[in-house]
Length: 71
Image (cartoon, rainbow, N blue to C red; front, side):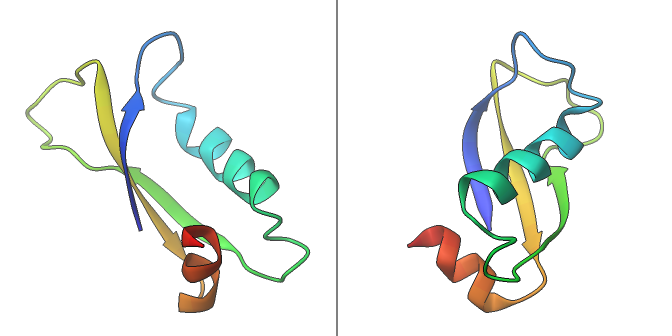
């Protein structure tokens, strides 16, 4: 799943991945449903600096987990 237009101001981009996973799990009741986020990563070219907004890729352990979040 890709989440677009995440604001990049006012937080530490280096530690955001772990916080994004925690927030995604909590806000979508993933633990209760036994769904897991396996990885999150910023989707940008390595030679390009972050702008005001960025896109984040989110990998789930199952298609059902991603579908639950989409719904």
